[in-house]
Amino acid sequence: MGCVKTPRKKDVLVDMSWFIEKKYGIIQLNPLIPLKKLYEKSHGSGTVGKLWDLHHKNFAKFISIFKLKKLIEIGAGHGQLIKNYLKIVQDSNWTVVEPNPKIKKDKRIKIYKSLFDENFKIEKKIDGIIHSHVIEHLYHPLSLLKNIHKKIDNNALHIFSVPNLEIMLKKKYTNALNFEHTIFLNENLIDELLELTGFKIIKKKYFKSDHSIFYAAKKAKPYKKNLSKHYNINKKLYNNYINFHLKLVKDINKKISNANSDVYLFGAHVFSQYLINFGLNTSNIKCILDNDIKKQNKRLYGTNLKVFSPKILKKKKRGVVILRSGVYNNEIKKDILENINKNIIFWE
Image 1 (cartoon, rainbow, N blue to C red):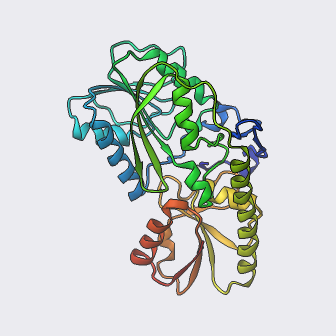
Image 2 (cartoon, helix red, strand yellow):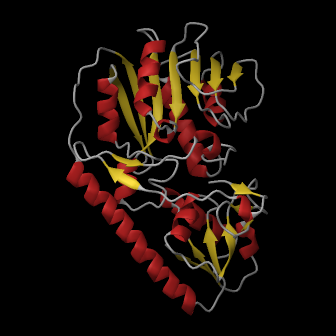
Image 3 (cartoon, rainbow, N blue to C red):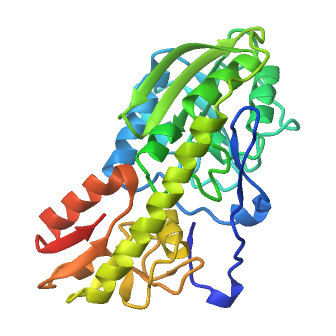
């Protein structure tokens, strides 16, 4: 999902094939991309924008309810959650387990540049294990849950944030399922997987109606033996999602061919990669727009499109922006219309 300076010929392209398991209706991607290739470089997801900032602040407050002091965070990325939590609980200490850490040095933070797997040893007693928007990226989420259950003692908590994938799929958000979100981990399935692996949910909170779900769970004995069956519901939901995008791209292509102004595509991320591979005609698209300065002046992986700041729209008398950024749409539109150019038209 990242942006690169390397030539297009070095990009690795693989078709996505999605399957639905007939007994329980679990949707999964197969085959899977080798993790070392998929996460070779960080693409900065969750680091830019007011909504993500609000998510990290709200999740930090949610964790602080339990007054935890010694924590392990799996997949901390750029450390925004840690930064917000340390403002609330200043005497807490964090151990970070992250293969590509981008975290500022702090005596309260210890970093392990690695994956959290069965070989990782917890050196000292901890109050809890934390992760945010991580479990949906894992190829074996059940293994993670079992591993956490095994490594923490009875008083420690397991607290995490996960995208609300079912709502995202229902609302046809283009980033719902992709080559990183490889399993349809909806709320019902997460609840049942926690029960299967010996966790009792003690608190749950929704961040926005269509963004994330916060979980807090404690150790218990496994008290569910089988998953619920959702084959027909999930199959219909996913097929509606695919058919929507096929029609959407067809309609946008007609608009592009008749456009009397420059056309831009917003989002140097999976939103754009999905639309392009659904057949979006890029021959008349000027470039991709993105607010992340680390992506600007690079090329979106898998495409020929260069990435620039939305500020290039400032002096345009007219212009069209294709925008399919899901829950972030309103934030992006508001910024462009109020701070850059009020004459821009959006195709959503």
